[in-house]
Amino acid sequence: MLTVSNYHYIREDFSAPFPSIFGITPNQFENQLVELSKLGEFISQQKLIQEIDAILSSDLNYILITFDDGLKEQFEIAKPILDKLNIPAIYFVNSLNYIEKKVSLVHKIHLLRSRISSKAILNCIQNEFSSEVIHLTTTEKNKAELHYNYDDKESAHLKYLLNFKLSSDQTTKVIDTLFFLNFDTNEVVSNLYMSADQLQELSRMNMLGSHTHSHFALGLLASDEIATEIATTKEFIDNFEHDNQHAISYAYGSAEACQNPVQTIAKQHGYTIGFTMERGINDFTANKLLLKRFDCNDLPGGKNYTK
Ligand SMILES: [Zn+2]
Image (cartoon, rainbow, N blue to C red; front, side, top):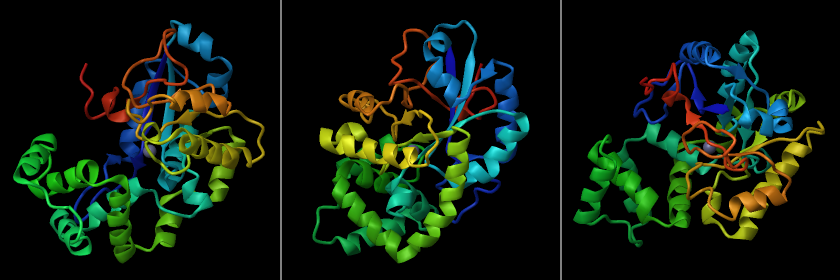
């Protein structure tokens, strides 16, 4: 059996003018590792790839720690804790942040929403895109408030607008405009993402994996675009010249983001192990290119975990 615990942000302080970045503290991380160590044996990427069939059909519970998005804090804060406890992990990175030195759309949204109120973002969108269809009808507003019932009204409207109303091109245009006005891309890239040296170190330890090039939901793209997204990051990681095989984690990890032909194209590029964000433990029935993972909050030691 294989249980995977996945992490994103890990930092001491999550305070922000408009808190929109969520994750765990170093203490919570370390406590969770101790809890998880009681459940089974931690496993490395190398062993996972080499012995996957035996691992999946074993009665023993193997535990894998994964990080998505290539965030610097995962190396600088989480890795020393893992090293201290002698626990391996896989760090899934997007090559866009290195090859093009760009910030992923998902992080632009997180950063903007933590600095600017949803109301102000909605106003900016209306000013910048007055000619486009960006107004929500009363029905849409009601739908948004129902769908995002944990958020205040403005945040619900904003999320609905970005996720359901605007096309992905429009969302990119809106967010890029706002991001450019409020942030320095070079500064964010160098502060938010791991450095090339840090990637080199992870590669040397066979802890580097692919999160694809641009952090797009692959399943929504055309086949040739999926292939480019996968091939670009594979080449980027293989260029670190450590002769290791690595796994892939599909951005967003939803059923939609991982739908066919995503796994077929991953396989064509030499991948044997792929990860989604479908919750669950993997056993001998698992599809090795669509393995399940838990968000760390849902496992023992996590804030949503209930026995
Ligand atoms: Zn991601």
